[in-house]
Amino acid sequence: MQLKIGIIGLGRIGNIHYNNIRYHIPEAEVVMVSDVDKNRMPDDVPYGDAGTLIGHPDVEAVVICSPTDTHANYVAQCAREGKHVFCEKPLDLSLARIRETLAVVRQHDIQLMLGFNRRFDANFMKLKALVDEGKIGDVQLVKITSRDPAPPSVDYLKSSGGLFLDMTIHDFDMARYVMGKEVKEVYAAASALTGGAVAEADDIDTAVVTLKFEDGSMAVIDNSRKAVYGYDQRLEVFGSKGMAHVENNKPDTHMYYNGEGAASALPLHFFMERYTMSYLTEMKAFVKSVQGKQPVPVGGGDGLKATMLAVAAQQSVERNTPVTLVGENVVHQ
Image (tube, helix red, strand yellow):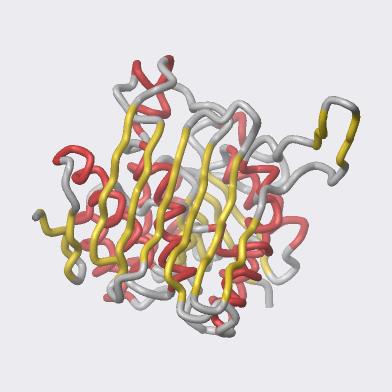
């Protein structure tokens, strides 16, 4: 039997999920869609407002791709209606609101998966497998580079929650995922160096974050909103038995040499090109979990912990001091 899915929000990410489910996941079917912009609606799928979609008897699971400030409300509504949920990150910008929403999810016993798609990138999955197989030994240091080719619009920046909650949150989740450990301390430094939309939004665009894990091992994350050469996504894991790393994906692998030097293709331009297959793989995992009544691979607790790290990083920048995490609490030193 196909899983009957409704999609709320048909912007860039919503369209990716819609097309993946519609054309590449035969185990699922899009039976209804919703978006505030009626021009985004496909002609051959029923549509309605979000409340109608969530309450529709044919909808078994809901994919939420609407703006961040709607996520928690929609997830709670879905839970009360007994609908499973795939929700893009973050669940909310407020830790208190996330905790309240997760309590509703537990009360109604639905599946909730968060959209940390980088876990499902084939390159990163291979690196994670090497860690799990013990090939790296005791992991001592993870290095993550994550840089966008250009900042988003001012309107987007003003509602995004800032660089840590919008962008670095993926890297926080990746660090926890690769390490398989919990973070106990966060120390971050950040600046606004590119001007333009970032300065107008009073945001930051460049950051370095150090995470210290419970056993003393560490992760270092560096971010930028503006890498002129493309979408820079690299990951390295170093341990007692060796090192593994993932380089950027490129449109081709050619190298050109002449008397002046060598040249190659630039990295893929943006996340939709770089992570095309990961979006499909994560949605397949969600459908499989719901149909098999198995735990989802990235749950609400993972989303809460990644958001906690983002909040801690913000506080670290503001106070210019490390911030400690104890359980599910951010503690100021």
